[in-house]
Amino acid sequence: MTETAGPDRVRSAEQIGLSAREAAAPPAPEGQKDSPRNAASWAKKVERLEVDPRQGVRGTNVVGRRLTGPVQGFGKMWQKSYRMKAGTQVTPEQAIATWKEHFPEFWPKGNRFSGALTGINPGDVALLDLAIGGGVKLSTGVFVLYADAESFTLMTPQGHMFAGWITFSAEREGPEDGGETTVQALVLMRANDPLYEIGMMLGGHRKEDKFWAATLTALGRRLGLADPKVETKTTCVDSKRQWRHANNIWHNSAIRSVFQTFSRKQAT
Amino acid sequence: MSAPAITMDVRRIGDEVAVVDIKGEVTAACEPVLMSAYEAASDGKTTRLVLNFAGLEYMNSGGIGMLVTLLVRANRQRQQLAAFGLSDHYREIFELTRLDEAITIFDSEESAVAGAGSAR
Image 1 (cartoon, rainbow over the protein chains, first blue to last red):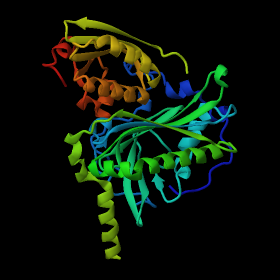
Image 2: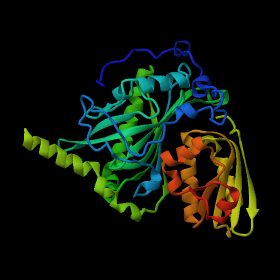
Image 3: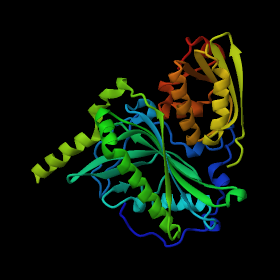
Image 4: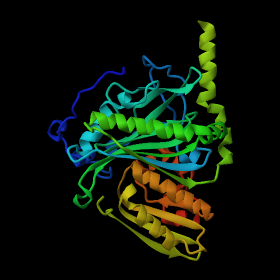
């Protein structure tokens, strides 16, 4: 996926054509009455990630990796929320539709997200090249765990900087609170291994905060906000480190990306 | 945010086990309900908390995140978390998110309370 400019205006609810509930809640087919109404919003179970090569990203450190949630991570567990008010003119469905459709374009310069051509759908795997300094790009990926009309969630693979989920959502406040649409990125994570944990303490958290604030700001501008303001809230959910997962370092994509970068340079 | 469409009733089974009967929709919005059920279930003696998902109607990714938060609280109190009553669909979600590695899934309340036997 290339970084192209998208439409200047978001689509209207009519153009989107489905209400959030309708989109999130397909009726269960006959014979599958046990299926919950959002069954189609969840990815199917995978043991290990599979993905085809894509142009524009290196695409290493993803194929064959298992998914990792906060249970499998090493470091302290953090919940970070990045919230932005998007006004009363934009509905939650419009905000999420825009976010899904133009997700790579909102990323800060120097970072690349190459998703499936169809957008962000449950079970998709996106490949990432993230600038980590020194001319090195950290190659990793994310898995679309859940996606409906009002939210979508990405889950990280082994070797990623953190083990966890990022949920992007939008909701309408009640009239008593102003009736504005608020968009949010919510990260629930543990650093994947001891090296990443040190990195997070030495500026990694700050860098991540800047990353998501910049992403939301770019989304806000696309939604037509003149001066998007992002509110960041960080909570340490668990101050204990899970030393039994220290050997996650074997999969560390940063270390592997450094070797991959230099071996590639030597080959050329 | 609208009020969560969920109830969580706590039953005690002996001194050490509490069962939480979950009925309705598990989303991030029901965190206060879950945490107050957890408080009711944790009276200092509880060593095993069993979540009954037989009445679960709907769960999104926010709900899964909330269960991780519950897991952290339970671990802090050295309590084990178990679950039963999950449909095939949600059992798969637990496996996909690898939550089943921390919350043991059982086929029945009896085995979940006993903590052995038919864990899958």
